Image (cartoon, rainbow, N blue to C red; front, side):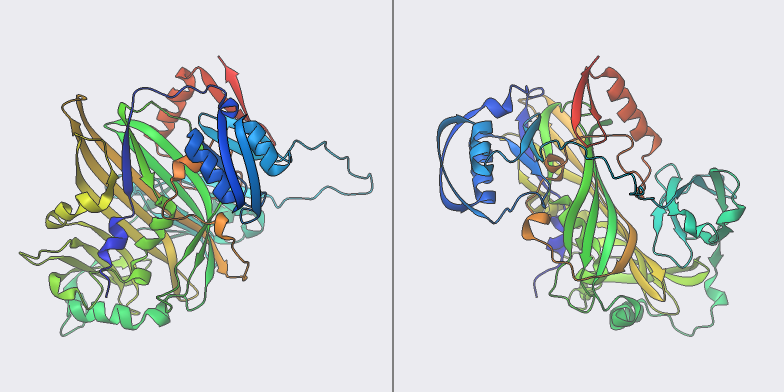
Length: 525
């Protein structure tokens, strides 16, 4: 059996390149190239242009027939002329740094007939608030906020803040707020008077002596998790509407922030051979909050790999019977989660295990043996394996060492089944170079939030619409706009992230504004 640890190791394949300051945006479309392509796919031709001119392309997957064959013979022509020849002048092109955005030509608005009534969009209620520990008054990050008997939900951010957007038709329903180790909070939406609402959760725990059991064997609990997967998790494919965010910091400075709405085709849990597919819907990016200090740090395959954190689907080493002999398991406590008794099982690698093991906690529903949350990180012994697996490329004479590698995944209950709810990967790297006088810590965080799920309707995904393990997410996203998400649910940015975005916008000479048609226009201060 192929070791499953490799899947999680390559959630972040990182590459470094030396970057002295920001690149100039000197008429990218005017760069001249020579290219010969005979009966090749449009994707292949764009890849050749990208390689020769050192540019990147972004386009709506439904706009271009990526698999269509084309023949092209270009000698010392501009990129614009080359693209016009390839697409028969059907499209417009906009540039953002080294990014070329292929778009539809601006269409003249056609007036509707007087008898034609405008389409009415369903009214959306914006419910904002903060989740706080009732006793300690501490904020509670990553609390789950959802609507009872619906598939809509979000989570609180690092400051305990959240924003939930729900259709007005749900105004008679109930908001449910839950967090590990706290009593579930329920409140009818009609009874919430304030649009900015503070929710206090009551800590709770269950003493082991109060539970009538004779023997609690942690390994038996692990075995029951696996034996009951078909009962506890979906046996049918699902479509997950999801929000994804990638954050990168160099020391204490935000370097990159990119976000996207994704559609994930979740394969049945019983089918271990079919992988989940991730489709990009829309996204936004802050254009360099602050330039990199000498080293340009890239994350490869983030949206593709984040779904691999679904350890029930991947059956990672701490669950896999084949690798269980490498671990020690212990029952730490029993707590209440959503008013249900829950086992907390701690695991760690046995001594002198020459294998990249994890350490962490598993939260297991006592009555069904469903895994509802896993928090785990590479153990100290495992970090020595991480260097080669996590770093794809680095400049010569650079020392790069992973310091912390942490993961978290949670599941939400609906109609007696648990569904993937959140996933997070957090990695710290130490980067040093005596020659270039670099001594920095890079911190990369990827977050996935499933905001809604439904049965798979069988819609076919084209290959060019999907994220792959080689895609660099931040090079696909091209702009940032405060109101970009509209009625979609997201993870509210923390205060320090909001401050970083505001500060950059105030200091930067060029602010990119997005008009109603989604076009970016530069405004110089």
